Length: 259
Image (cartoon, rainbow, N blue to C red; front, top):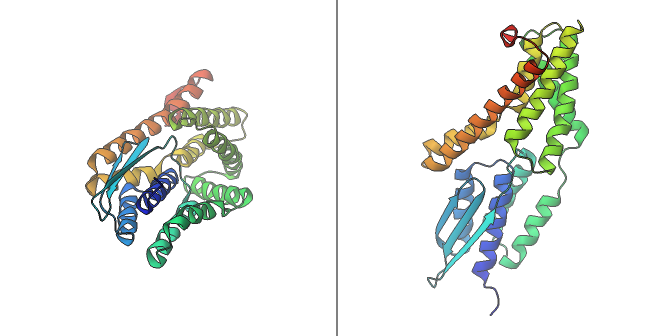
């Protein structure tokens, strides 16, 4: 017995769910997108369960037959450009209602579209961090150090992302290195406002979008998922502080001097 049209739609939806959540999508928006796609292909009673690392989707077809798919999501990050392309794909499917055989090909084609180049992304991050450091009172040498740290953070996060390293671990390592840099340049007399450097680099690592998603889940009826996401956000923020603390301890500095 071959695979049915309903199963092809469900396979596509599970793959789409995974890509959207890995790109930083909010669970509520993913749920809405899946329900709209189900409506287009006459599927109903959709149910989604997301535990933070596994998502399970079940639907019923017009004959009352149920289908269930479950997929692992080992890593979630922030990739707004790809998420935007996936959202456009959802709208295209809802408007055009392509044949289920074409859905997976459409998803693969969407994922093949290149994002901004590394140079453009690095320039954007450095510009944002430099402006933020200046707001915090950083001098020209401080801005140069922040730019250097931002460049290092960019390639570190890219490496950690490809290695699927837990963000709790990667944040502590990244912030520890930034702390080393800020303390070293301050002791050499080059940096003038060490707190501005450290706070600016911390903002690069703080999970702002996951925090917003967690709060939105809590207030939109997905309390358990929101609480899980909020706990992850809190742990990630704590590890940022822990990485800075380790840098201070290894350099023999007094943590109170940061304040």
